[in-house]
Image (tube, rainbow, N blue to C red; front, side):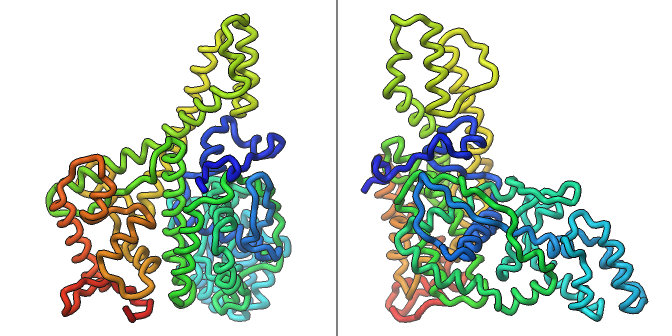
Length: 520
């Protein structure tokens, strides 16, 4: 079924609170509410874990969801843990003091009484758990070393640690007058969309046991972090209405995401090592969801991503990759315009085109329809004609797109290691070693012939490296097969240098996943 089939698309009721946050409902109708360009892969994944753990707590992990129905959940602040880790600047100084444990605890507790957001019960619980102050200092320093470095973590209440377990999962926050409130700068709801995608995918059930294991409170590292948590940290006082909106009941990217995550889990990687691959894969599939959906709205086929394995000198592959990138980068803007134009041709909009009606009546009708169909109702309307009103509408649409949506493709692509400007001043697809390794982890369950691996990357993701895939992707264009053959050879050499490819005595090159079975 085409995912744009009307029976596959849900519509959020106009009574939904989601419209309180959206002043122009166009991209949201196409892609959902919302894709947030400022979320890097780890922030997106952390937000997803918050949502998934909340639903797990309620016994409905990955239960099927519907577009028109909200999926409420509750989040934890964990202000005790966060304050100890990130609002605790005097700890290092105290650790150097030559005082007895009683004196050190007394001085530290006095300092922390003035902290920005202490837990309701204060910090005395730590004194009971750590008779030796130095043991407390060492654990704090150890956990701090797992802090995730993001571009948006300058504020202490917006810093996060590696999600070793449920005790390390908490919402982003702004603290004012000792009170925390939700911040959407780091957690922009894209993690909620990722959760909804999985809940509607084929095979979602296969992920449940893996996340149940990750959310086990008795995991050793989770229990260790729990020593720093206040009792109140385990409560979930932040009720989220679950107003994120994902229009499609089914979508091919949903299924491919679950397929990849399941494959990574099945490798049996130790501890939470799988997260290093789940996070970029989640963002990659979110990017592909946006590209494929935009292309479908425009009536085009699935986009291809021409990838360059960086060459010592400029080759045709680089030109094709640059062209591929910018063609895909324009899809979301074009899709928004086409969607709006389609709505403006339907139903009651015919009345607006009726030249026999007075201009003021047509203007009033158009204003009402813009509010109904697009949630567009600017506070000030300095217009006297329908044409001026529609010009204002399209200007608002363009401004909104430039504010966030236009950056989704480039931001997601850069942060997962897919998009690069290395060696040029223009973006193109040039995967990093880390991303290539992640693709091998997800797509190579056993030793795989190199050509089959390239074919699979093209079918599964739309990634183009070699001449065979390029011939299909660039069917309507002339291209230099020899240039893509050299690109293929560079990829082979690169995978070999990473220990992920070996050419055997039969002359065939095989891609190897070091964590998968070794039988052909």
